[in-house]
Image 1 (cartoon, protein in one colour):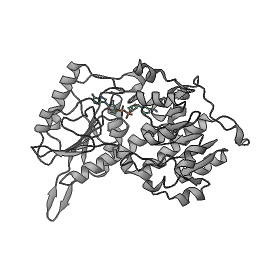
Image 2: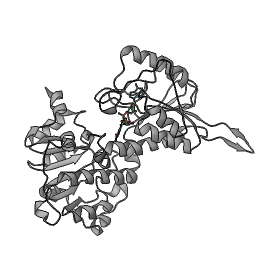
Image 3: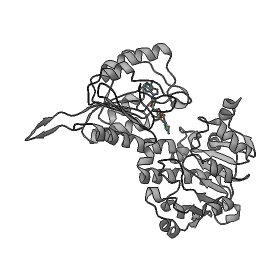
Image 4: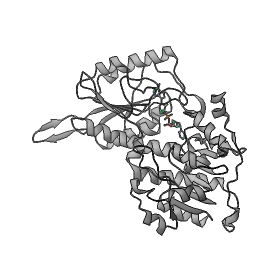
Amino acid sequence: VKVAVVKESAPGERRVALVPETVPRLVQAGLQVLVERGAGDGAWFPDSAYADAGATIVSTEDLYRDADVVLTVTRPDDSAIGRLRAGQAVIGMLAPLVDPQFARVLAERGVTAISLDGLPRTLSRAQGMDALTSQANVAGYKAALVAAEEYGRFFPLLITAAGTARPAKLLVLGTGVAGLQAIGTARRLGAQVSGYDVRPASKGEVESLGATFLELASAVSAVGEGGYARELTAEERDAQQAELAAHIARQDVIITTAQVPGRRPPLLVTADAVAAMSPGSVIVDMGSSPLGGNVAGSEPGRTVVTSNGVTIIGAENLAASVPTASSNAYSRNISALLLHLVGGSADDPASRTLAVDTTDEIQAGVIVAHGGELVHPAVAKLLD
Ligand code: NAD
C-alpha cells in the first residue's frame, strides 16, 4: 500500500502528519511512503530528511494519483477533496461530528474517511493512537507560555535588589489533558496555581501536580459518557458561574480549556466576572470557537483588551504553534493507527492493504465513511 503525506494547507497550520523518524517503521512493515514536496517545512523537517529515511518526494498531482492512503493532520481543503478518488482512503483529524456534511461529501466520493478524533480513548490498546491527547498536551503547554508572554509581570516569586515580586495567581478551568499540562507548565514557571473541573477524578490529578484544587460549594459531579464531562443544567451552570466569579476576581491569569463533546463549549467566565478582574490580568480561552468559548467576549484567533484592562486571548489551534513537538507525537499516533488498519504481513507487501472491519472497536470509532456510505452511526445521526 502507498501512503502519502500531504502538505497541510489550513492557515497557520505548521504540523505534518508523518515525521521522518517514523518513515523507516512503515517501510519495514511493507508500506511505501510518498511525501508531498515541502510537507514538513513548517515543522522543520526538510524533504531531504524524508528521502534519507526511505520516502519518495512527489508533486501534488503525483501524490493524489498514486496514493492508496492519504495522511493529513486536519481535514483536506476543497482542492484536495476534488483530487481524492473513489477507493482512496484519508486518515486525519477530520472532525466529522463538528461538520457531518463534510463527512457526507467524502462518502459520496467513495473515499474511505478515517478520523483520529473518533478513537475510543479509554481502550488501553488505543492509547498510542490517541492524537486528541497528544495534541491537547502540546496545546496546554503552549497556553501557559502564551499567558506568561502576555502578562505584564513575573510568574515566579522574585527577590532582587530592586524589590520583591509576588508570584502570579493562575487558575486553570477545565483540568483534562490540556488543563493539566497548563498547570504543570505554569508551576514550572513559578506561578501559584489552582485548578477546577466538574469531573471529581481531576481533584487528585491537580493535586498530584502540586497545585490546589478549587472546591466550589455548588460543585456537582458531571461525568458523562466515555469519561467526559456532561453539559450542566441551566441551574448548575448559573450556580457555577456565580461562585467562580468571586475566585476569578482574585486571579492574575486564567486559562480555560473546558469542552463537552458535541456541545458548544460551556461559558465559565461571564462578562461580570471579567469586569471584576484587575487591569493587567490575562485570560487564555482554549475553549474559544466560532460558537462561543469559555469566556465572555473572547474571539477565536484574536486578542482583545477589555475596557477594564483585561487581555482575553482566543486561543485557536495552539498545538500548531509548537509544530515539531506536536508533529512528532501525531506521527506516532497516526502510524500506530495505520499499522492497526493494514492487513497482511510485512513479508508480502502486496498483502498490505487496508482491512476495513467495523466489528473491531477501534475501527468502529474511527471509520466515518467507506464504500460510498457514511458508516459511523453518530455522524449519520447528525444528518438525519
Ligand atoms: P475535553 O477536552 O473534552 O474537556 C476538557 C476539560 O473540561 C475536561 O476535563 C472536562 O471535564 C472539563 N469541563 C467540561 N465542562 C466543564 C465545566 N462546566 N466546568 C469545568 N470543567 C469542565 O477533555 P479531555 O482533556 O480530552 O479529556 C477529559 C478526560 O477524559 C481526561 O482527563 C480523562 O479522564 C479522560 N480521558 C481518558 C483517556 C484514557 O482513558 N486513555 C484518554 C483521554 C482522556
